[in-house]
Length: 127
Image 1 (tube, rainbow, N blue to C red):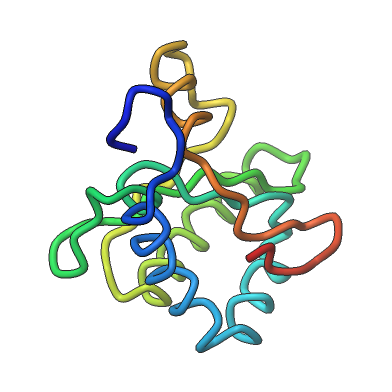
Image 2: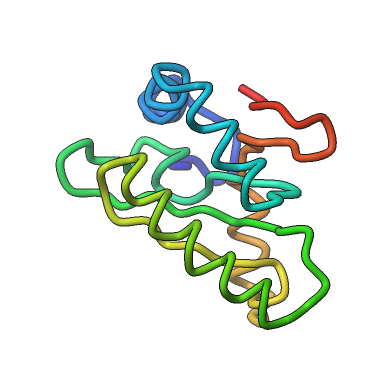
């Protein structure tokens, strides 16, 4: 977000609407994908939620949590859904997990811009 108060601007809203439109156009496919890979929460963050998003060149930054206790299974699911999300959005996806965020400054920046797009508890898109 452009301003120092981290208050969403109209341009931020327009940028996020492009992602929302992609999901809404294929809502059943997106929901099925999230359920198939036991997604607990999926957030968009970074340029995808700000006016820095470029429809032609930006990737999509996502923060994901998966319901899987077995580390090997969890890793396999993360790699598989990463590919599927890139296919779904037809662009590069940077996929992070909460446990991979070691840098407190990065974590703070992500928390400041993240928007919940899938709520696994309710098993629905949260847009």
